[in-house]
Image 1 (tube, helix red, strand yellow):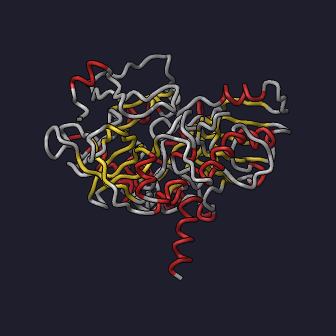
Image 2 (tube, rainbow, N blue to C red):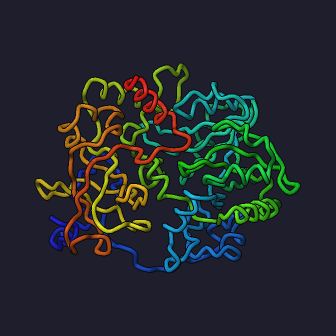
Length: 461
């Protein structure tokens, strides 16, 4: 059965064959495509401090809404190469990203460490001041609420640099009745990212030589054009990169942007949209696409975020430990699991407007969906992340029940129902095989990726 089957649409538009019974709110899997609508700009959605620079000066031609802020998602016009031209700049020179949509939620006060440790799964007490860490926050059911970069800027102050889901109100709600001695606010700080092989050259010019001494996830207080900023060696690309957090951004954002943009261009770079094509290759997840509040870390290659040795209590600990115990005993408690797929078909050169349907080539039954597909020119194939039946994976590999499933290419095929512009044969699905994740190594590997690399090195020795 294809995703265009009219009888299925007449009876149920949302592809009921795909088992979403373990979700309270199923994903909308109806294949509507891109209707070519126009984005309405109004005062209900916020303009970032970089809005004028991105859209009026640098010519961003489209946007999405992220954290209720307009977010540029296209700088190079399609006729000039579009998103894949931006990929070239990211992987070959240097790029500037407007990521002010990463709202900064500050937890400050005598109990800042205690509250932070209570809401994240990892151990906040081990994060030294002027260092950061990639973390997740889960609800009591073990669902991922957010996966921010957590910055500890002082002994009593943490910033949650959040992904696309409301977090401030949840943190404030958690503290009702807990009565931690903290203040929880969104602060006037706007980040930009400088990503690509020449990013350090740019940062040395605008900040100074000391930027070269920042360790991965390290922080540095600095000044650009007379404005106070916080610099971190982090990013959303898998390439070498930094983030500049502009303090008092409503006043200082453009004063920082101008010399940074000028230096990026002097090194042959440009502003681009966040590099989703590159982050997919690096196996970096996007909240809302690859996971949400009903997704467990164990479904999406984030099991390493649930430690065995954290003494302190945290929201979701009981449920996550229950899930972990089930998995260790050989019982997988979810219907679908995220995997990497290499996909046939014509090159996918832009964002997918739908969660494209995945089916089982042996039975023809719809069984899953893609979350983040894109063409990778380095690998010369379409790649992507998608949910497929856990039982199908389990039958193929004993590694299903832990994150080892991501460490191998498997001789396991699925079919992806690509839209006509990408299908090799119109109306026919494209074959896809389960692939190792990350597809392409990161310049700065994640903790999970580094552990995998170390294990591989030990085996080789």
